[in-house]
Length: 117
Image 1 (cartoon, one colour):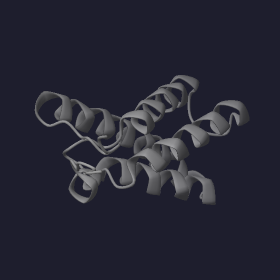
Image 2 (cartoon, rainbow, N blue to C red):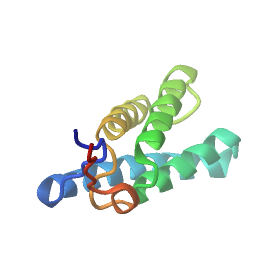
Image 3 (tube, rainbow, N blue to C red):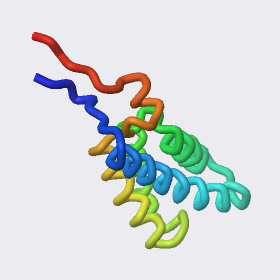
């Protein structure tokens, strides 16, 4: 049985890196603009999640948090344009399912491992 943490390298690992960076940049760009106008705890959490996704730290957990925050933002109407929130929700779901990839802090901490029975 193989471990759950199997991060591919090469083109697939680089694609996961790009996906993670895109989601982080979306979160950061939307949040930085709004935090200057109306600072709140939710915006601070979004800022931390965006930085964490860019570096790939606790990626599946932060992906789930990103989905929850974007889902909340879609229905509260408080944060950003609809399409930005929808794109963040979709990217966060993909990242939560796929993980951080080989080129992330998660890849360094939990990289390829084989469970021996």
